[in-house]
Amino acid sequence: MIKPPGSKRATTEIIRANLPEHPAVKAWRELRPTRIVPDSVEILKERKKSAVYRLEGVGAGGSTVIAKRCQTPTALIERTIYEEVLPHLPIPALHYYGFIEEDDKFCWLFLEDVGRERFSPLIEEHRALAARWLGLMHTSAARVAAAACLPDGGPGRYMEHLRSARHTILRNLTNPGLSADDVAVLETIVSQCDFLESRWSQVEQCCEAMPPTLVHGDFTGKNLRVRTGQAGIALLPFDWECAGWGIPATDLAQSARRSKRGFSASPDVVTYWSVVRDHWPSLDLQVMRGVANCGKTFRCLASINWTAQSLAYEWVESVMCDMRIYHIEMLDAIQAAGWGD
Image (cartoon, rainbow, N blue to C red; front, top):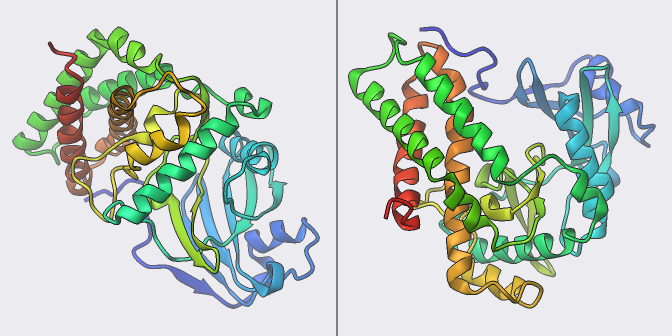
């Protein structure tokens, strides 16, 4: 079987030798920190277009630093978030150490290690915490000028996802690794995309209920950690490369099948509404639920598009497992919206 290039490592690897010559350590040195060489470098992700490393002991007070190497366009989005947006918002955020250009294609971001306590949409306290954090972010970021300069995060972005996903699926339906049942699922997803495109004006109308603001864009369990301290529990999101400016529907996406893995964070809509209603008094709870359902549609389209890129390879078992989840979530969103009525 041929796996997609850059597939994730099955286990992490810890490097302890020749550390001053490691690319992450070389980039860290350019920030002129107090301590340059870490005790170890742990490989969290290492792909052709992105990599993430844990530098042990080089941060404030001997703490751990996360070194993230990514392509320049997405790195610049994250840099804007950490330097020009988050410092102006009344929400917990990671400590940001700095930004280094490697060359004209890649950059490095250095951040506080968020810890290992994962967010779970199965825990009601976590869902309420996520809702309060989002409510504060969305209402306060609406007034930050730098956030308005971010890429489009509204319905237009998700129409692009829809068209790209449909094109990619249709191009790969003859993949010999796909079973007849796999093909049937993919063809149903294509039909869902066709249906949504035909009703897109209704999707846009649903979104008009909320004002534009900062959108995280990938607000799901894998990009969230929680930290418990003397002041209580705090939410710490990261990975802002999908951030944009638009209707924050996708951040509010709800999953019909909550799991630890998490299709979405499923922030509690009632809690979110209790935070934002004083700022946006025209929003009632029913409208808020409709926007969250619209966000679920957006989340499905983005996830399908990202996942569909791997249909070009024979190793499709995990890909199709995800596609089946997205198909069910999309069906649930379309039925809840009543766009077919």
